[in-house]
Image (cartoon, rainbow, N blue to C red; front, side, top):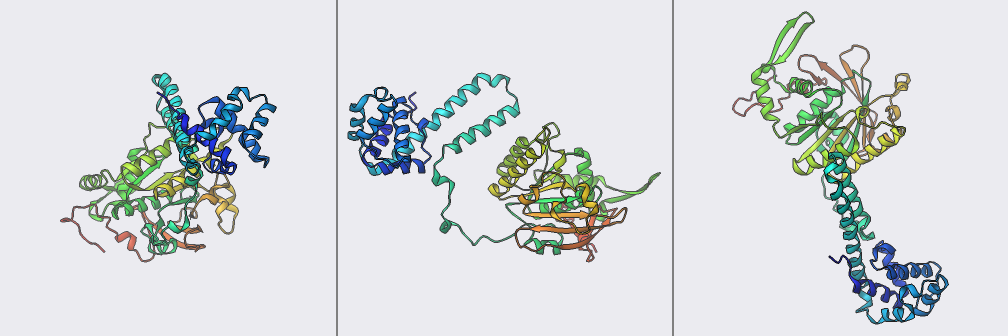
Length: 435
C-alpha cells in the first residue's frame, strides 16, 4: 500500500523553483519537511526553507550551492534532478492542491503507524488506554490540518442566534443571566458545605428536564440511590409525599406511586456518571461527548471539582487542564456545564464575596462564564445566592434570598412560585395544579 504521491511531491518542489514565493503557501498549510515521503525531497524542501528564511533567491543554481555547502547535493540526485523538477510541474497555480495531496498522505502514514503500534498492544490495553489512544489519534489529525482550518471568516458568522439556554426556574436569576444559563457556557457554583448547592442544582436539573432538556449528573460524594432519593424528593408533588415520624423527628418520603412515575419520567433523560469509572479529565470528557452527541444531553452538572482525579504534584495544573477541557466541550457542543467548587478557607473572612474564593487553581474563575455563590449562616433555613461573574449580560452583584423547604427539598423565593412548580412527571390525564 503506497501512502505517498511522487508526482505531487515533485510538483511542489518544482513550483517553488519556478516561483520561490510559493514557500509561503507551504507555510500557510503547515507543510513540514516530514510531510514528504521521499528522503531526497525532505532534504530539498528543508534547504528551500533555509534560503527563504534568509531572504535569498531560490533556483536550481542557488539551491545546488546550498546543498553542496551541506554535503547533501549527491544525496538528492545532483543538479540534474533539481533541474528535472522544474519540467514536471503541470501548473504552478495548483500548488495548494499538490500540498493537500502530500499532507493527506502524510496524515495517513502517521495514522497507519499509530494503528499498527496499537494493534500489537491492543490485547493488553484497558479502556482508559484506548480512550487516550483515540484522543492522540484525533490530535494527530488536527495537527495535520492547514492554517485555513484555524480561522473563520467573520462575515460567515450569523448574529441572528437568540440568546438563552437552560432556565434555572428562579425567574429573577434567569432574567439576570440572559434567559437562563446560556448554551455554550461554563458555570462555576461555589459556596461552603451545607449551603444547599446540591439542592439548588437538583431544581435546575428538574426544570431542565421539564423543559425538554436531557441532563447529566456526576456526584463524587453520593451513591446512585442517594442522588435519586434527593432528586425525587425535589421533584415530587405534595400528593406523592408521605409524612413519617421517627426517633430523629418528622420526615417526608416519596410514595411508591410517585417514585414509579418520576422514574419513568427521567428514563433516557437523566444520566449519572458510572461509579465504576475513574473520574478523571479524559473519562469525564469522553462521557460528555458521548451524551452530547448520542443522547442529546444539554445540561451537565459536575459535583464537585475536589472529587475529580487531579492528584499528583501538579494538582492545580491538572485542574486547569480539566476546566479548560470542560470549557472547550461547552462551546463545541453548545451545551451548559455547571461545575461545583467549594469555597476556600479565606472566604469566611471576606466581608464581600468575590470570584477568587474558589478552592483550587486561581485560573478557574477566569475560565468560567458565570460564577455563582451560595452562602448560608449557621443553621438558618435561608441561603443567599450571589452572581459574582456574568460574561453574557455583564450584570453582577445580584443577590437573592432562597428559603429552604425541608419537606419538599426545594428552595423558593418570596413569591413562593418554586414550591408550586409542577415539573410534569405525572401523566397528562393525572396532572393537577396546586397552590
